Length: 279
Image (cartoon, rainbow, N blue to C red; front, side, top):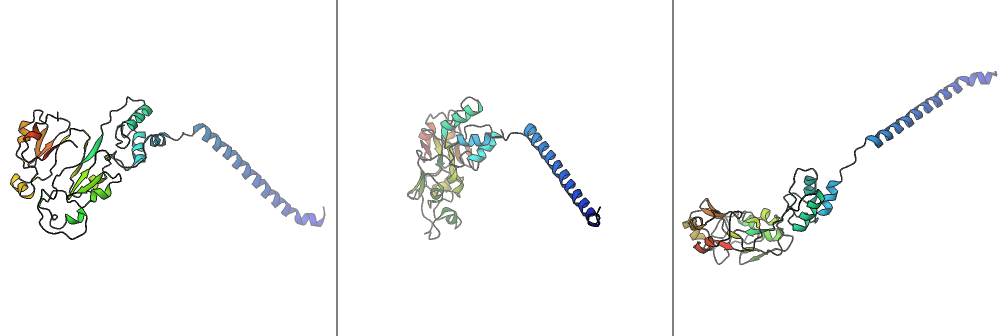
């Protein structure tokens, strides 16, 4: 063996050691990768696609009428079975309820159409003006200034917070009072959240719905001083209701729509016409 070979032998051995080490590490990596692929193939859990499938059945308007933030949230609740009510979608109505029922293999749920109702009739003709309001033309600001310019501190202010919140052009303001159009309203609840006086409620869209359109809880004498058409708490509707569908809450009559038989007695006896029949 030459002197050169003797001098380079340690280097050659070192290189061989590095190559062998690389080959060993590479081999281990290949074996481990193969094992991971095998384990993933045989033991992986397929992702739950139900949520996205349910989303496809919903109208996708994200109105919030179901009580959730949008269609995705409602779909997630149904997919996880945290919610089993298949008839919450107010925008999709009976068609969507039928589609969801078919998807889950249930009998079709009966969908009851709903809409928003303004529980006030206090137009400019019915209430008196306390002062001339010149501030920001929105209800939330106006009600903070001495309870608003109208004589009723519980009535509609008419500055259109609900109108601006509605995406479906279902609300108009006429003579200082908000009006909701049944044919356009999908009961999304945006106007309910927008009203600072909580005058708007979601009710069944019955053509012969009976509602007390007043939220003033004060005694009758005070109501008469502020509005010509408010509920004065006389109790005649309660006494004359044969189905016990009406009760008093803070001197104000409230009708239970689930008990109401639409007999018309309350409407006939109400002395101030605070009870309205129909939408």
